Image (cartoon, rainbow over all chains, first blue to last red; front, side):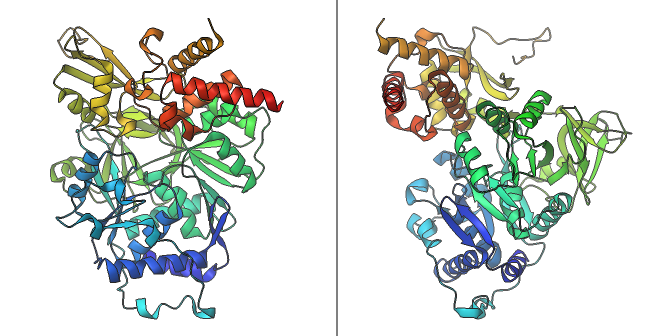
Length: 490
Length: 91
């Protein structure tokens, strides 16, 4: 389904710029040819069949986009993973997702992964297989006679697996179908009136739900352009926004905070029509300062890997850090109490979401799915309310998940690693607010007297991605506890 | 104190302050690798770079901080010293 829709976008906009990568410009026609080349490679060389799962270890780059649309065309599942994951963490995903091939920059990125007993060289696709410009065959470039035998992939076929953290000690895998992704993109495109004149700066990593859906898939399905940023650099970002006339920016409070810090007063971004912040609450003071410096309002967006984008703050922006706008057109939100009763407006409870963009359930988690998905709704684990105008407000989380700069981190996963170190007797991991109002990871440890900070950090580094390693390690003689003896993390 | 030592102490203070580390200055030796002390993820790198740029009024490429030569105070202070010299020469 995505394959056919993308074909139509290409036919309608062949000369339109699709991707800007530094000095390089790629049109939709050129992107299509790259995709076709890779489709042939997947089917003829790797013999990839429908529903096979392909892991992807790439930054925001042309090859990521080519890889996704080619994978979707053959009916396989694209599994983008955080490029900072350790080899152990990667192996978890390989087994959990049933990965049979990997797309990476080099074999070195996944040298010790065991993929279904096959040799690594057979199953790792390096980016050179996805690159290499091809000239169109005169006016018939869009004809894919030799690929017409590919069955049209059904709407309910899975095409994407996303990873999300909770507080269960292990990441969960969220499958999304062709229909889910298209419904999600349609919702946001309609709400924001996306056109092919828009240019999206893609600074949020594509392996994140928001980065994938709103910074890559949405522009590609709209005939718009993606301006690529492989790594975040605030000065480079400001320069690119001006030079490339970026119109839309999806970011996080951290990104907007850094932009505000380094830009002078009245910096201005004349091409920018709108910015969206998600992943964590945006402080009101930051929103005001950003508007003063850039003349653009930052609007809060709320969503999740499981549901896609749920709501966007449109119209007047209220002075309320938790306000995240009305649910989008086909999204239904309700608030329930602890015993499951639906609550009226202005009462706090857990936020439940129903959306055609939503997953049907986590991969291989029957017990968790029974509690997380109920009567067609997803229990987000977020606490909040709907106000009298139908806008959502977020108050916090039910569970212990840490929001580290917009990325969810499972404290239980980190605690398990710390407790497996022989010198650590007790460990508790919490998120504490820094001066930007964002959470950083703190570990409180009771350890042997000879346990050094460098040993703890070094131990974590071999087992956890860098962003999960604690910023602060607090050694204590004993854990802080309340009057009932329960550990009180602080 | 020599100019080099003064520079290292300034960097040490900036490191602790910008990343809100709960470390004493004497716990960060000149040759201690930063990533032996805390998770040096992309957010930490950006925070540290912005603070260094402000303090010394220079521009630092974020990628440089992850290169092996700049992973401790010895390497980083030598790099910043060079950048300052170039900046002053080009004025």
